[in-house]
Length: 313
Image 1 (cartoon, rainbow, N blue to C red):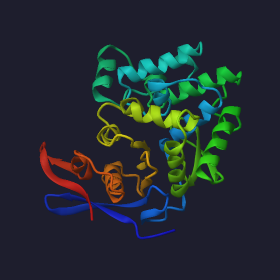
Image 2 (cartoon, rainbow, N blue to C red):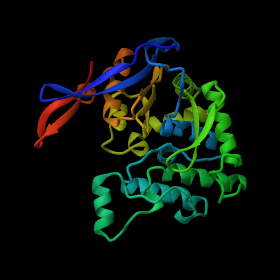
Image 3 (cartoon, rainbow, N blue to C red):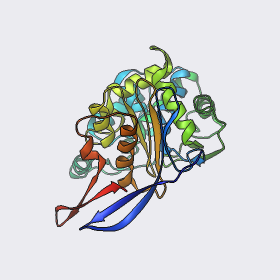
């Protein structure tokens, strides 16, 4: 399955100064392709877009989180105070503290939250890292199953084997290779076709199943899966029933309640092109809402005022 890649133009003062190429797969409610650009069946690194599948693997292994904390287990959060306290709550519920985390130390990505940490004399800590909710949930799952804590990120660990099995089941593909994500957790290489299939499985599952528990928590608490000002949260608030998860190196995966779904990958990893292409994929599937125009084209500033845009050619 292959078609010409999309081109995203960065236009400043009337001149195209940069371009990004993008792959896109958008499928209808029945799973058939509606719009395809680029080699969507080639191997790809979905990065944090896989977090809902990782959370599903944990729920299947007994993790009993619900609501906001289950959503946080799927999150690439902004390090806002409620994110940090939520991760600490997951840890304390398992009898642990943040010293058990094995993700890297970091500062909050949210500017106001980062400034407050520094103003109060704080510094980098694992609990602020955007994957700390997922790592806290991984540790809680290990405690439930009496699995080793120190090696929970090892691909051979029972937790990671369970997650890999879940990824392969929902994508319908064998994991072609295993790498290391930015947070230190195993990273599974599959195709955009497989990730799209997996997201459809989450939203189309029967209510009360582990799959729907993850999807429902994710969609009910979009600020907990990203942040209060993130475009993914804005998209989910604008289109009730939509689930959107971003990943590093400009990957997006989404699914709507009726099975419409898709994936987006900006080939050079340019995050500024990601949201306009995702909006185009949503619109190709007839998913429209107030506020999408603002996200469909990124604004370029010069001297503090708009002087250009990021747009699909």
